[in-house]
Image (cartoon, rainbow, N blue to C red; front, side, top):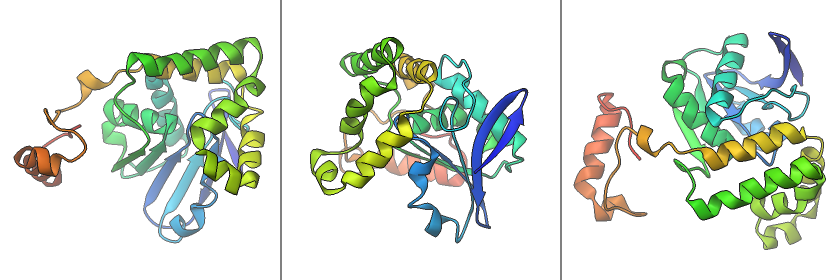
Length: 232
């Protein structure tokens, strides 16, 4: 692992491989070692950069109060590491929300965007767990939400089949900075990107190719040709 200083703030990162640049952003309940299993194949064809968000691993705590501010922080790290404007970005969970804001706020700074386990925002009932985790972490500490974190990350069957993975994830999350974690939880609860989507395919659920095929084809052709910004 390596660190870089940025206006008095230490950021932990790692870079491996050769080829086109690829940036990986971890979720709220993990840190950058979560990518260890996918790095060997990815680094055969890409120059991969992973970084720990503020308060995770050896990255200094930074007071960031929104997902957008996290995206701004990542953009500064990208500049400090001289990542090219063609860098592709993959984010998982919280990292995916940060990646979405990165594309919105710093779109000329990245190439392609890939996200997993994300959405433009959460419905009101889904915000309560984040607020609850923030409160527990602030009053008790990270240890209070470790079991909750594992339950959100893995189905029960996976936990039973892979106890070593569960133990490793708990050990990796336990040292996270409580204040940074709590702020990130509240930032997720407050996030709503729906008004900032370039376009939305209306009256469509999981299968737009069946429900709204004409709209989907129009979206794909527009995006591939470079004449459209993107759709949700």
